[in-house]
Length: 302
Image 1 (tube, rainbow, N blue to C red):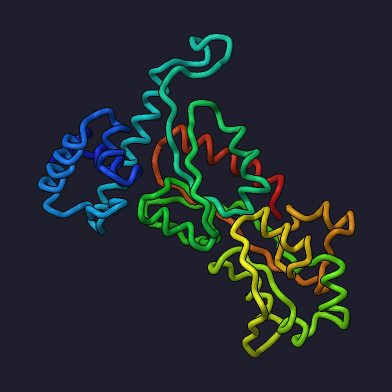
Image 2 (image 1 turned 60 degrees about the vertical axis):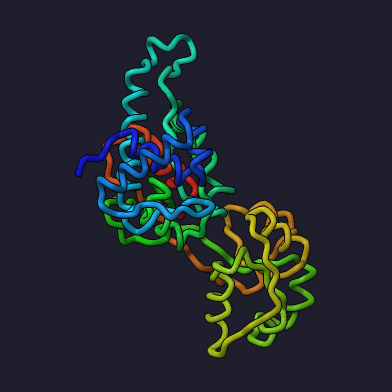
């Protein structure tokens, strides 16, 4: 099977940008050229690789070719960085003059808000990040379909073609404002209290609160629910007394010390293990990110 680089770049651009027109602008060619290159790639593969929807989507066969296209793009970007200049010949800034390497990464919201951003700031120059925010239990899907090259996940089993390193664990505890805790849990963290008290969730994939509820009752509990799909918004909703929620120690230690939040269930906690999964590629860009993530996790996680 003869796969041409310009064809692979067209496939990657079409899926990344969502339309042939946007892909054409990205690659500075005409939409007709994008269409012709993808058609030639499909002829070479003997498969339909793209669903011509809005946005365009890769077929199951297309995902396999897309992973190859993105791996080649990453390695080409690494090479461009290497050929573009070194710290010695890039001037006083110490920055490479090569074209930045784009690296898509999947990160859960709590990690992104608390310890990942400082880690990314320490990655050597020459890397542009495309962050996909996703629950840590679902980030492996984005690795599997080639959307991202690396992910922070709660899954220890490696996705095919990836390697895994353990980072540590984030500890979550059921927290609430003092007023909320007194109103709903004044008599203790009983099953009856949990069944009646409103609870705050990040989104419908967020299972942490239900895990806590299952620990406290053998019967299904379905309390009133609020959804706040941002890490900062979620924590603020709990601070304001809209409900209780499982909050990471990294995010609320200052609030607890100041009396703005209290634990509603004694020493109850849930530790969520986190792992770094990335494609098995000899890529300086990926390696640099992995080193920065590991260093930050060592100082932040349990």
